[in-house]
Length: 142
Image (tube, rainbow, N blue to C red; front, side, top):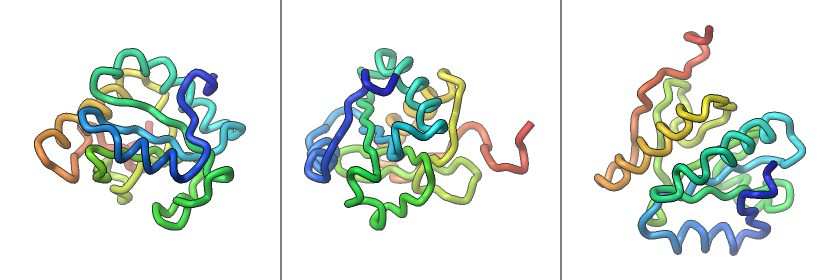
């Protein structure tokens, strides 16, 4: 399913994607296309791509193929989603303790759309950190 979303295959492409987008949030999923968690998340991202195209653009990066950012962004998890707006990394507080990135699969399409829209609205107001409407800490898993 991830073949429909844009793949960035080198560090220069990742930098250009982050630098060149002025009006929309850049959503980058770092991970491997063959990882089951990434496959689930890619499917969700693919389904929402059309709905969020006015305020976000979604890219996929295989961090084994493009290791340039592994140390810089501490990409040690199998799945990592990061947000950028006007060349600035936007942090998101989801109650997990790691505000730099999302490292878990969110299977609900509307939740992902809401998170991206929340990041977009906060970033447009100049905020570098947005707070999620839902607490994703493991303490509250059902």
